Image (cartoon, rainbow, N blue to C red; front, top):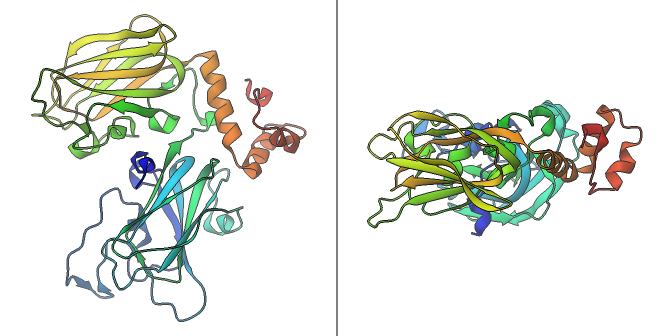
Length: 363
């Protein structure tokens, strides 16, 4: 698989995804498709409908047609790749699958989604059984939903939709937000070690429920220390940092520090401070440094549940935040957005994208 599999799963239940509809789920429930945990299997475990599978499985088709499931992305964004995982489905996996995407306003019903403008992300492609089947996506627009079609029927354990979240600025206070939040468009720029878990967990929505939902490094046997760097949602000023070691008890870092990348290079934001296990630490950050990236250093190693960096976007950051979202919208949604904002000829503005200013949103 390629590097895009390390990007966040935009469809995961852990980030708010939901399987809003499937035409059939007789053998196994559609909701299993987006479970964050890897699929499991226990042989000879039978329910009243047959062997129990950790996935979505439809009945054997006796008429023409295909089976489908629609997923509302927990984090709308640009899809870079899709994994159709048929783990443990051997004689009952679909021979082919395809994936479509759409972008809609609000919270449409399944019937309304059926009438949406769906575009192809993954053409009809062969699948292997009991395998992770990866498919790169070249469409760079922002989508809110994906539709998995299996040809003609069968079972899929998981659907992973890897990509880059793109936040809707209409629902974000750009003067007071978590600049490091995945849902606001922040990304992991690099890290020293991710032996036990992904650093993307650090900036994921909500609290970590267990230790495995944070970022944890291997034990160091040298004199160095571990670190992770976050590219912020946009250029901004960080006022408050939260370093959360919840669930990390015998393996929390002993100390941590923060530094920021600005126009003059790297500068300290938080001097090295002592941390406690299983604790949410909050630190006020002095000064008003404009930064685009923040590096967390932990000493010497260990695990962190969440990193929050609260602050405000600069005027340039605000403009970039809004314009990135608008320029990535599929045409139908972009027109709807401008029409609702009272723009007289929304189609003309949409045709002129990428735009460098957007008066309807004050940038």
